[in-house]
Image (cartoon, rainbow, N blue to C red; front, side, top):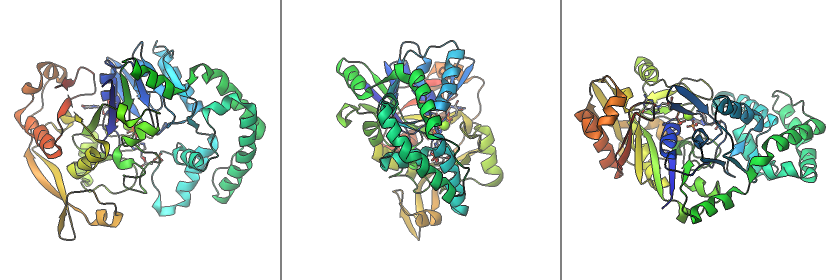
Length: 429
Ligand code: GDP
Ligand code: IMO
Ligand code: MG
């Protein structure tokens, strides 16, 4: 089946960018299908480091198409900066394709994101303040700007007339940063975007399905993680899109029966940015140690990520919801030199052992993790050298850890990542 998908199984930042870049070698095109520039995917190519927010990771490999699907919300003003990062590195943007059905993030969406967060008082979500939620709100409310509108002055003008006074009133009501835009300034902006982005715009569903018909390999690059899914995550502490594999179909216009292998990217421990429950969280010095050892600082906002032990209740939720067929286990090297490592296999809630992730935040607040303890393993000199020697060369205790995860989740760990570089990867397929 010539399509491969990658989803985050936790709260994002599992290393999807690295794994997408690694697998992109085998693909003809890489597709983003949800989220926007709230995502931050770090990719190391030799000595270069790229931080991509919106551009699909395939943009770094020559001759591949990098497709932004209809389910993505696009901040065109900020994407220009990201495109500069690519061209400055000597790479081309020829392979970029943008769906004519994708929605736009406007300046007022960012302002509304900030204002809504303040309005929530001590119940903030801890969003990235990139305008993601307000842009998806407009999509669902049927008042958003779509990429195809850029080419039709009448459609633009009609939507501008509706949105400008509406958003200004809303921002006044929320006492947020006021919107200075006018009907004329917006029209000017749209015209410039039409000129810059016009050549990349097409019906990406037709593009992807034609490619699949002709035997090409399509790689779907998920953003965020299943626990941030608006339906299946820790609502309301979630993002505003479907991050699980269902979102892949609605967000790309490719039917479910065309999705082949689904990789779940699983970090060897847990992190989360922003507010919301995290049952296996490590506090104080323990949490800080893991945060620093793992370099757990947000790519998009720079915030320190909350850290904790691996949670297999979370992973089971993701495997079941997404139909994950293979795991890509990342950042195992960060656990080097721990004497003991814990893995959560269930929650104790009100005297009962729970194996499935509960919907209720109050139950999650009372959940006590049930841990299985593992012996740690020593550090090594070179991840690159170790990866070149293959799976059998890994420390025995690390293999025990990996094999326990596989057994519990009933999914093979086909990719093992022990460093940020392409060459620090063990492929067991
Ligand atoms: P994404 O959002 O899922 O793409 O992940 P991020 O890029 O936000 O965060 C993952 C971070 O871990 C990045 O800095 C990667 O370069 C890095 N990384 C990925 N895989 C590994 C690994 O196996 N080991 C280590 N040490 N770092 C990794
Ligand atoms: P990648 O693709 C980690 C989190 C935010 C916040 C919540 C809602 O790099 O894994 P939003 O701005 O989306 O409305 O914020 O979701 N969040 C992420 N956390 N990685 C991400 O993306 C995230 N994108 C959003 O921190 O808690
Ligand atoms: Mg990230």
